[in-house]
Length: 75
Image (cartoon, rainbow, N blue to C red; front, side):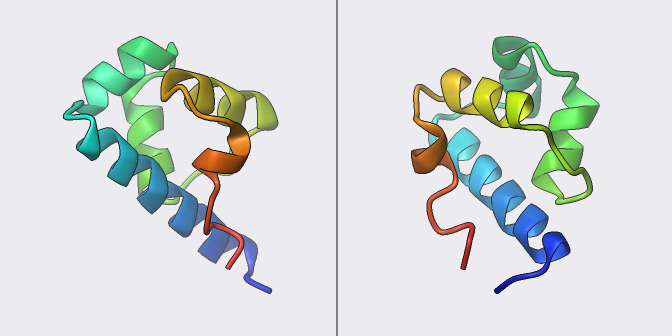
């Protein structure tokens, strides 16, 4: 089982990977999701614990389920 810090880091890497595969900047992800750019950057760096509602916003923005977004995050 991973610790919370590793889960945040892995989730952040996953968010960054999906964003980059879509050709989006952090600014575009922020605009599409309604989150602040600095916050999306902090998520990608694994610096922020995020709420379920934020996870839902990100999944919806990427047109994914939460399960798809978090695939591989739990180790």
